[in-house]
Structures are given as C-alpha cells and as structure tokens.
Image 1 (tube, rainbow over the protein chains, first blue to last red):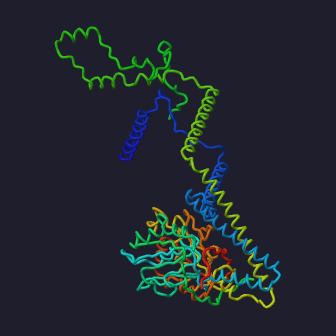
Image 2 (cartoon, rainbow over the protein chains, first blue to last red; image 1 turned 120 degrees about the horizontal axis):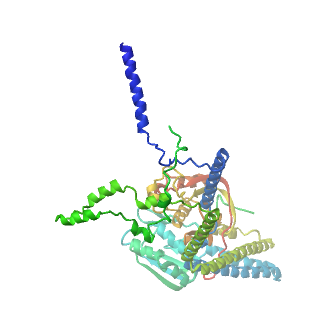
Length: 271
Length: 325
C-alpha cells in the first residue's frame, strides 16, 4: 500500500516537473536565437600557436639584445656635449697640437744639428744638456722662473678647505697648461698628493700653512681663466669654504723649490 | 528541446506594413518617430466637458508607454528592414581608404614630432665634433712623431763616444711619465652602477630613483691622489698615462684624461708595491670613500698584478719656464 502510494506520488511529481519545464520554456521559436560566438581560430591550430610563441620569443630576444647593446655603449659621447664645451675642448686640443708641433721642430733641429755638426761630441753634449734642463724643470729637479701667476687662497671662513678641492685646483692648472708649480714650499710634480690631516692640509707629507700660496709658471691668461672661470674651482673656494682667492699675474714667477728625483723601485722602462 | 532551426526567425512582416526605408537618429524623419497617443474625439469632448484639470502626468505616460508601446519604433524599424549585404568591393574599398588615412595620419604625426625634435644647432655641433675629431687625429699623429724623434735624439746623443746612457735624463723622464714603464702593482676598477641597480642586491633603489650617481672626475681625482699618497710610481687610467701635466677632468658628461675621453668601467693601473697599494686602497683604510661609493651602487675592485705595462704620457713642451740659478 504504502509502496504504491509512494510511487504514485513520485510519478506525479515527475510528471509535474516535466510539465513545468515544458511550460517554462523560453525558446518559443518567435525570436531568433543568438548563440555565443565561437572562439575564432587563427589559421590552423597548433602550428600557428607555435609560430606565434616563436615570434614572441624572437621579439623578446631582440629587445634584450638591443637593451644590452645600449647598456654597453662605449662609443664616443661628443654628441652629448654642448657647443661651449666642444669649443673649449677644440681650443685645448689645438693648443696641445701647437705645443707638440713646436717640440717637434725643436727635436728635428736637434737631430739635424747632431747629424750635421762638425763637432759632434760638443753638439751632443749641448743637446743633452738642453733636454736635461727641460725634463729637469718638469720633474722638479731644477729651479725655474718665468711668466705665470701667483694664487693666494685664504683660510676658509665657513669650513676648512679640503684636500679634494685643493687637488682639483692643481688639476685645473695642469689642464690650463701649467709648466712648473709650487704649493707653499712644496714643488708640485707628477706624483704630488694632498691629504687632510687633523691640523690641516698636507702636501707630499709637508704641512701647509694658510693662506695657501700657489706659484705657477705658464701662460698667465690661461691660468687666470682656469681659476676664475664661472662655476670653476675658484668659485668653489669662495662659495663652499668662504675663502678669498686672488690670482695675480706676474712677469717673473720664481720657483726655487726643488726636489730630489729618486730612483724608482718598481717601475722599469720598457725597451 | 526544440530545434531552433525549424522555427521561423520571427513572424513575417506583412507586405503593406513593410517599411520602405530605414530611419535613423540623424535622419529628418526621426521627429516622426516620437511616442504618440491617439486620443479619441469622444474622449476629447468628454475631457473638455468634465471641467477638471487635465492630468498630463509623466509617470502615467511612462506606464502607458511601457505597456502599450514597449518597443522603440527605431528599433522595430531597424529590425524590420532587410539589410542589404555589402558587396566585397565596398568592404575592401572602405578598408583600403581607412588604411590610407591611417598611414597618412601616422606620417604627418611623425613629421610633426620630428619637426618638434629638431635641434637647430645640431649642424653647428656636428661640424664642431668633426673638427674635434680631426684635431684628435692630428694630435695622435704628432704625438707619435714627437716620441719617435725624441727617441732618435736620445739614441744619437747616447751613441757618441764617452757619453753613455744619460741616467739623470731617464730618471727625470720616468718621473714625468714620458717613458713607457712596466712593473708590479694594482688595478683599481670602478664602474658606473647598472641603471636598475640589479648588479648588487644591497643597492638601495630609493637612492637611485631620481638620478643615478655615476663615477665623476672628482672620484677619479681622489683615487689618483690616494694612489700617489700610497706610493704609486706610475698611474694610468684606461690606458692613458698620468704625466706631469695630465689632468683628470670632465667636459660635459665625459671624463677626460688629458685630452682623451674615457668611459666606464674605469681601470686605474698603478705601479708600485702591490701589497702596500692594495692595503692603502682597501675598504678598511678608506672607509669614507667606500661608504659614499657603495651608497651609489659603485663597487670598486682591487686586483694585484705582477706585471703591468703602462704607456708613456704625452710630452710636454716647456715654453715659459726657464732654468733659474
């Protein structure tokens, strides 16, 4: 009894459900059915997909390559310089070329006179002495005099002048074509260094006293410009350290400071 | 499920109701399409005779519209007219026209951008650069000539009887850096940081976001200064020897050694006692230097070498200075 009844209820529920579904149908056939667009396939499946990935990989590789090239770009960067800087560099280079030209003429003269001179022995000695003088003046072995400037730098009123700026001054003067230099009582040579100590500046191991005095032989105009140029080392002394910088051109700067030229221990000449 | 293919797409439109042409929003006929209400003559009479305020309520009208006219006339128009399939020719013609317009716009755009980016002084600079390069070439040429001549003169002088090699001269020249030298020493290398700061994980990116600090001429000057102090006998940067009149400086963004350009990585070779030099230059002896450099992502490296070979510096001419007694 109970079983039959149960089945009847189930059966009628099924029937009811089927009817409901039929009644609830929305596709009446009156409206056009719009289906979801199928995913568009480009070309033919797997091969296309593989080619696309390959192309992407290739493009990525190219991008990386280009970036690496750009990163390691070591070529000349004159392009980035301004006209002013270029002009300055050109004039500096041409000055150097002129100097070398002069030196070349000098050396050619020496060589010719060595070859042609009747008294070769004497001539050779003369030339050797000439060369020795030149190199001795440069190396600090001999005292020198000539046209140049005297630079006086007072003690900084804001803070103490540091070694880096003082070294920068020497570099600027070298760049301006200085031939002989002395800082206070120390002859400045190739290997001159400046260091900070607790008491003040030290140059090649000797303490410097304020006001610092730099004697320099070279073209006075060039040397003056090197210090006084806008934004140069002279204004750095003034602005950062509050020091007074005076550059006095002189017809005769006398640099009597010399130093012994020792034998180098480690560096050997290359034949 | 019924098969939708079998059922008609929609009820066919009767012939007399078939619209003759499509209306569009921008056509003149659009005014005719607005909602309209048919009012019977009887109703009008009744309304006017009722002596009551005529209710013209928007919300009522909306309900009326929704129930009686649910479909927008424009929409029904669009649905009902047969759209003529466009011919392949017209499709391709349009595509080509659009393509040409795109190209033209792109071209004109790039022309404009180029116009905006032109540097009026570029030619001047280019001519200056070529002049500079010419100067450099002649400088190089004359330098080798002078070096050759010098060697010849010295050789000639030395070959004279009772005149051996001049030791004072060669010592002087060694000090001035005008002789090529070799010997043991150290190589101090420092390079500009990689832009991303990825070269070393410890680099704080915050410091390098606005602009990246690179190695400057002041850094190189400082290192050269320190090396001289540590007892170096000869120094060269990227193969350019530091001579008595060689300066380290910048021109624009380029670092120059004398008149020669150098770029990162900077390789500073110094001849001297390798042990002393490397001890004087390591991070223990120069904590300040290393701190500032490391903060910028620059990591100096020191390597000792048994045999460094440094070229000669350019010869300097002495014109102003005379030997004094």
